Length: 259
Image (cartoon, rainbow, N blue to C red; front, side, top):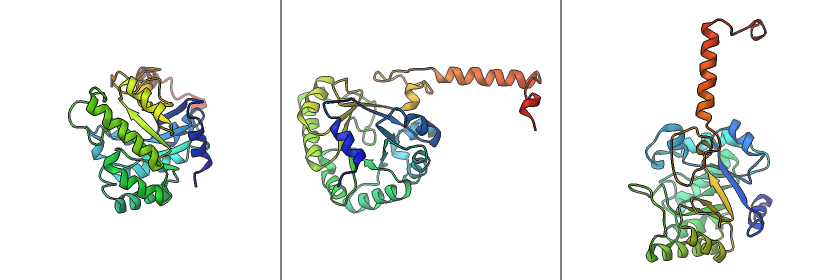
């Protein structure tokens, strides 16, 4: 039985764009909840918060602790949590860890990277009432070397299309298309019944997701698919500089800031 939140996401297919952003804490999630259909606790927190060179280093415990914080800031959005690397190597392991994530965090669904290669695992989760978001195209947990867009040649295109079809028919409620060539993303979005959510996969997807820290300009990443809506680093720098000046000049704290 699908929850009302997930049904609402599916209903947006071909009708209204789906908005998805990442959050790793309650404070950020509370703000995003006013604007998002989906809040994703992504394993991107590995590079964003911990400076890991790969998402493979993110542990299940780390994902759960951040997700527990995020849940406290969410009232209306669908909350999805990434299952980290090596937590879904087989159906039994996947179900155990997915249930642990859902039980401890109160999230609505989990996200797994891969198509046909992990389809038995995804089907096992769905059969056991775990709601799953798919993820194909560029797979950060599997990627070796420099990231590049997917769908450049016919072999790659056919594989991604096949993965999309298989995932859609398995019962996932949506599929993230990461760095998928735009004409291929358009083709897949028309082809499958569930919504596609793009990141670097063009406007043709049913929705879009970005890492919140990227759009806020909190880091120095310069991916083609990222639009920085504000330079928060500059604002933080200016605020810290002003605080420093006031402390040195003894103009802070004033009487009204003291007990």
